[in-house]
Image (cartoon, rainbow, N blue to C red; front, side, top):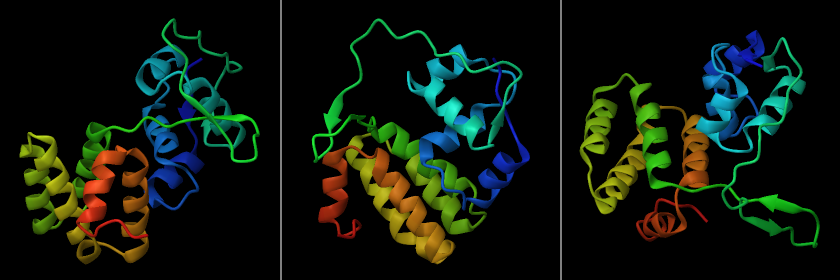
Length: 179
């Protein structure tokens, strides 16, 4: 199976207003009709097949063959946590400073503003974790002046979804994280 985007998906990716989380958006971008499910699983992770099925059912992807589950990796199963009510287990999302950095680099590239270009360069040149966190902080502080408040808040929320807890605490101390 080689899933590809529908017009609904193209509109959702362009408008940034669809009810998609960052991982779903990333998967939509990668679904170009050239990659099969095994390649997508290698890029996204073991939950890619379930996400593809969900996006097909939502009308964001189409495929010529029915979705097949990807083979389970031989490595350890993903970490799980139970819901507060003792319900079904929920898969934890992986957090990564690299993912946060790449996401914000992409956002800054889209801004077409000299200040965004300077922030992009600073974030690209950051080598240590502290430099990266500092560049993330500077970018988040400048973003409200470069784009709409709603877009800025969505970027902030998605960034905080992937940022490791320790680095999120650093931004919280700097006053970037609200509440």
